[in-house]
Length: 549
Image (tube, rainbow, N blue to C red; front, side):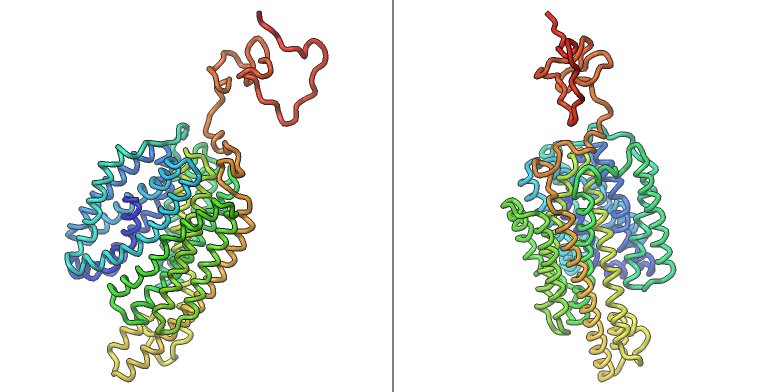
């Protein structure tokens, strides 16, 4: 949990440090955007590569390498003397984060072989992931309040040092015993597929569907098609297609997990702005209030796990989680322009539903694949989360922006008609009466946009609940709950059979369980299992097994 908490915190740790960084390093507007966004871009782009690499070189080894890189980059970022150095350090932090996140989830899969224990561990993992993002912004505000901006990076060092000391002692190594050759061509193809799509989706909510962003999405989708084609034809792909064919429920789990992330990030786009720009709270006050909904997260995953262990169909638990999250959007729809507790309640209910969904789908997806492929499976899940978050902000943000522009008065200044932040900036330069009128209109328009976005989000979640009931019905983890003990991918990982199951290889080219002298007697350790449709038994003396004196 140490690396997971820090990686999730670093997503939001710069929220309140940006003004201090601007005053000290004086970056340009473009440099400021890269300081903030390069971490998430590199993290999303390298998840699949690092997950597959961990399966090959060892998850603990990759975890330790990532921790060392993360600590060194944190130290460099804390004392960066130029915007360029800070951008480079944030990029290395993204590389470290991409090694740490799939390694932690893959290690959970390999450490906890008991289904009940693994479900509890993944529930904790999901809660820490969500809570870390909320905690990062608050910690950022507190540190910048009393120290200099570099302190937000130095908090990573003690935890990473502790991890480097304890992990070799407490965490056993695990890897795929038959990984095959590393797919070098798949690495640039995955980067070319992920980065342009994430970039376009992140920029559209604030800048609108400009040509360069639409082109970026199109380029990314083209490379995504090429990447999928490569994975289907390569001998040892980064993400084996057999992951989707070998166990029922893995593909739907990845897709539904993406929708859960869509809901979480889409709501965060509105709740953070609502607290600051509609209610007028300071950044630190808003961050502290935003911590309140996180209190409910701690009980969501354990309750869901207990229901599944008591025999409730996992499909119904996941569908219930989506329905609860939809109720959270329903509360956001009911919020007016002065409804702090309604918005906080909506955010808390939505987060609870998302954690229920995320923990159950993660457990299902990881349990559906063999342990040696856990890194690739974890990386695919987390890449889907990154896509879902960016898509939620892009789609729901664009819906709300369209409503905002439509409801703003036609005579309002152009900057005020674009965003709520622009309207508040213009209002500060106007006389008191005009300022109050523009501020009230902008806040009402933003709230209306949030209402429409909440309806869209609730509709998506309810549709996902229906899909979950149909797609996950009867889908359980392999440990005696509906899947074969050895999925197809496990057989694919083995190049050939040694000749005799459970014994030493036997010379010759005979079939399984067949010695050079003839077939083994029935019931012997090397006797083959009968085929599903046995051929007609031969008649006569030839049917009797050979005997040796």
